[in-house]
Image (tube, rainbow, N blue to C red; front, side, top):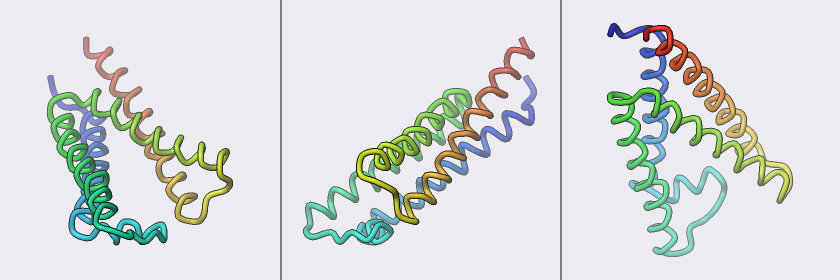
Length: 136
């Protein structure tokens, strides 16, 4: 089957998301405090450094590698995964608004970005499924 525009756009979106996550992952591996500086939190001890390295670095790298695999082997599953990832990031921020109050500039900016990325992944997923249905 010929690669179509929707598949190319979907793979590009998956790659963009993967590289975005990789940048935070590498930042966490090299300097965990730099990740926490984004939200004005100081890491007080080596266990805190280790935890940020593990969560943002290790988990982020795992997600990056998984997205590269999905980009090549199963674009639809990659889009489903990104829909959940970006959607749950945005949901987490909305829960914070309702539980703890309004977000600062950083959280508000990322709520918008994650919501847009969620929307893009849902649209691409819909278009990808529609393209597959037409081709069969």
